[in-house]
Length: 329
Image (tube, rainbow, N blue to C red; front, side, top):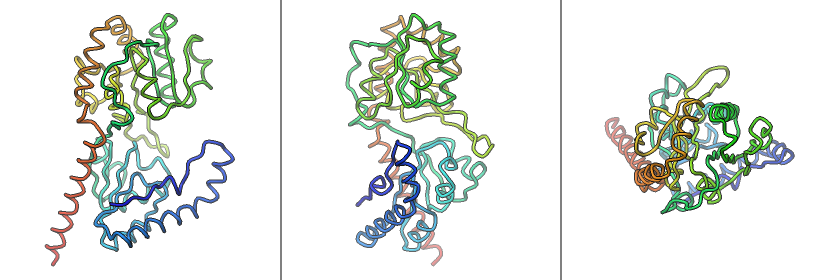
């Protein structure tokens, strides 16, 4: 096994000047990335090339790799392959196999997204080195926390929650990009942590008695409604971090956690407010549910466990290709 770190060739910047400069040099960065992958292919002569998402990996390059006899696999972690530009959308249909983290992708791969290649499902997971804690936090500092980048859908949710729960008496914390710029829309006593990454993210969410876990459900691309998320990485990270959390109710989330004993769920801001007010004074029940969710997720929902599932999908794809080759002969 060998690897190529895509971020070494296609860096992400937050400042506007660097982002503008990055757009200008991106074609050369992509060529440099492709040369590095080609060098690795020449040296290793692998059976499989696995690309994670693949921003900057073009369809014509994937076609060239396939002509070498290499099985090409994309592990796709996001809600729509159409949401990240035409180049990625085009390349996604060229891979021999796409392994998506979204449960709704395989069924709609052709009818919704227009692809004819194979798509299979392996869920997201938590990183044991980053998101795992063996015990609950002992001295919560907030009644309610949410850690997610601001988006209009989440803004509306939290405004509705503030109105329905009459949160003036609650300590509420929001973490993530964009929230402070909209703080005037929320109660004056709410607190803002800004963006948090890695271990700091888990440290912060564990300070909440209740963690809100939303999903991005309103997906419209080129004027067309597409399926939205049913889970996110936080679906697994929060359980691993020993948090009590309230998850947006989705068909998939309802299958992987028991709503009565592990993770309670909500459909809208009013139900979220009712659930928060119900569970907030019930310390023992929250502790029991957090422990049950933790036991459910650890280690079954970990990235190493998911990686084993991915490898099984890859082995099956190699076996199918070998069988098809034998039948052709």
